Image (cartoon, rainbow, N blue to C red; front, top):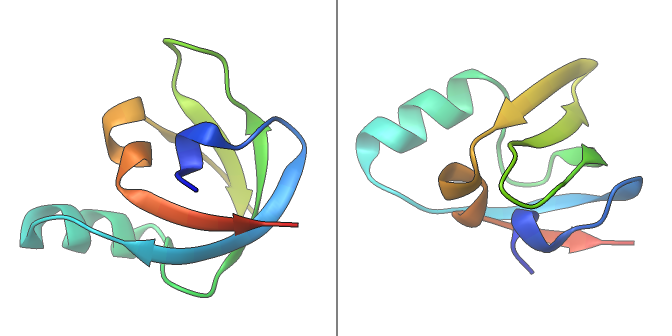
Length: 73
């Protein structure tokens, strides 16, 4: 499932991150890597996706969140 499909208060793990080299450098530099546990804090339509991971609250635009595959519990 894509990160944009996860509901608020959902916990899971990052399965894969896809994109060009620029995107991969940017996204991995903020700690979003395969195998990292996360919690979706907020996911309202037409708004950025808020996730909590590695003791940090991160806001991702929807286009970036579409490139991230997750496994939810």
